[in-house]
Length: 243
Image (cartoon, rainbow, N blue to C red):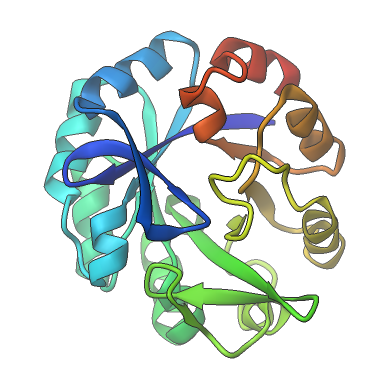
């Protein structure tokens, strides 16, 4: 299983949100390139970079900075936030990003996203569903996690038949940044329903035990953010646990 250390960009610096709320921000690094370089030096094969300003604004805001980061460090980057068009996907890929994360539009415009998957290739796009648990049902949230999509995760996934896409990233927003442990029940259900997908788990990872638990479910990757920034464990130890 791969470990994806996370870099969330807001106003050009590295931050983490609590429960996906833009008014609950912790600033960590003033120089994102320094953090990116450190992650790469510690053994990261992939790094997950999010344009939080773009996610909030609904349009690309920091894609130029993300492009600079991809050129500065020799590591694979998966990145999204504010991706709203095929042009946004193309720009990120052209800048050196290895895989583009498509969030809200994966729910609201599945036909367009399906066309992108066919045009750019399933290996170059990750569909990200940020869910809130409503009455026990996972429901994707939109526009920087501020609005409910009104459809459940299973309906949203069913719009993409087997073979159309490959990489799936699911975040339980209620656990994101809270370090309360990942939603193992949700991940297990996704694994059961869609064994065809390469699943990345996100939200709540706070210990090496969490990483081991996610791996045991058959997840292919885990996004790790605040736990690394607050030294709950080291990236090399996380990588070793996931191996």
